[in-house]
Image (cartoon, rainbow, N blue to C red; front, side, top):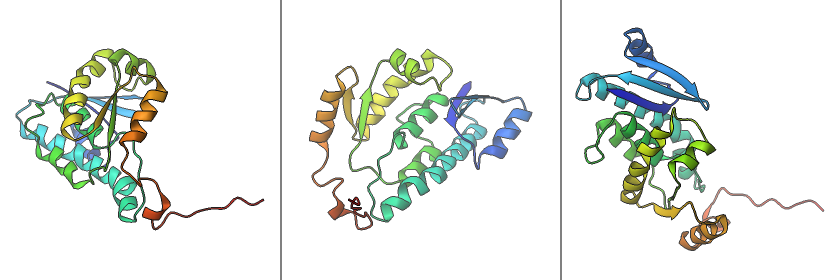
Length: 195
């Protein structure tokens, strides 16, 4: 089985080194992101350990960027949050979306967004825009996962073929009232321009 993971190793680095030395993993760096191809049987404990290690990496890296600012009362706008982590992991491990491994369940520790948007585009459009996956088929494989998991996680799904202006209008109509106002953000500061 081939496992592809799009992430930057941190705590999982020693396991990645071991997998490479044993001949289970090949690493490609593309778009500044690690693409790891690993041959591990799906039902093996090593596969579960790999999932756990990579998702702990995701949790450790996302916490200071998302969790801490939110605890301080700040509004966080993030591209590539939990949905991306799940899609990359599930697609890379050829998993089923109905049964999540413990590693994926750990991502529930991260705060759930008040609002989430998923702009669906054709795989070839995504591949031309940002080629951080090895092939067009990798993007095609992920489209169904994004749609399925995005809807289950409560994301507002938007059609990427619409004009930017129409998408912009739909996003602003969907945002909760008061989102982004300084009155709800105790640490936000107003800066006056010097004239």
